Image (cartoon, rainbow, N blue to C red; front, side, top):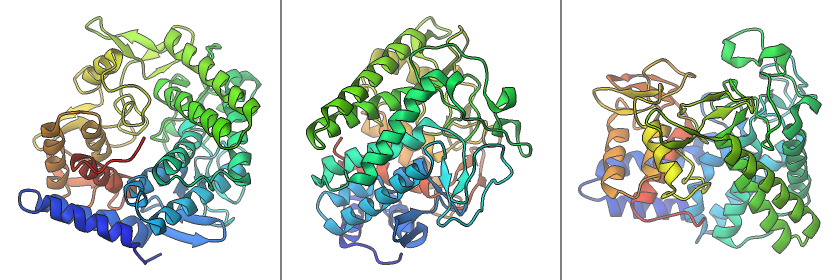
Length: 426
């Protein structure tokens, strides 16, 4: 897809005008990255718009949401931009109906991807790592699309079928011992497979819903991910609103509300721990048996991102304590370098920082000065490419992973828009 809607070009010109002078370098990177997703990552067919994640020929449910989310600002005024987002949503819910456990899909049933994994694959699936965010992100995008455009037509039969699948899956995985989902991979990294013959580590019932893999696509150590469960709680409340107010299905709205309440009780009981300073923070993962991990990973949803996704209030005391821990030596994946400091991931080389994490750091502070500083860091660590990467060496930014990573590009763009007061309606 090559044609850029007027809403996108008009917003780009507005950003260039508002950045004129002191922040022209932001505008240059914004101009290149904001249109890149439409120019190079879109494949349109009868099932909607397939969104390449970048330099991997597959569509991730999570990545594709983040890749179009900043376009919601343009969609507030421009119907052509809104139409593009709607086509992406059609494809996401088409994918979800193919398999609610899959995280990444092929554009056609071409059989490409990780076909030797021991799980229930089909030719449409690139990868079948079960991550709650693969269900939550498209639902959240549909909700935001409605709030930003007032277009309710997305809530059609495909949406209804997909969201019923999603809720059914979330409920099944509250009792993972009754689930038939298994995943084993016998090559690559140990983080790419689930222990215990693909079943995952031992857990106890908590009311939360089980998660196989993190948003990094690395296996969870303990399979109740707190940021993922907070995201599930949020989208279930959004679904309850959609089914109550628009689809007029009170019974399913109540089912979503009750499930959200069960997950929230589990989070409160098991997901809050004390850090090394004795302050209450959110754990990263727990198992319901008394074990937990205190850390944060660069990939969203992570603990740092909770207010960005609307999962907690930015002034929430537990969040602020958690944020301080995430952005400090308490988090073993927080790295400090000559040109940047920020959160990395076990998914990438040790010491490498993720631009996504820097963008989220800016999107979760009320300080305009901090946002400005982070945008300057992001622009100055592209190694001359004017593109965001998956991760980079903060002592030598020319050393980076993934030259084309559209998710990171659009997170930068969203932070620019946020800084300029051009915000998505939540």
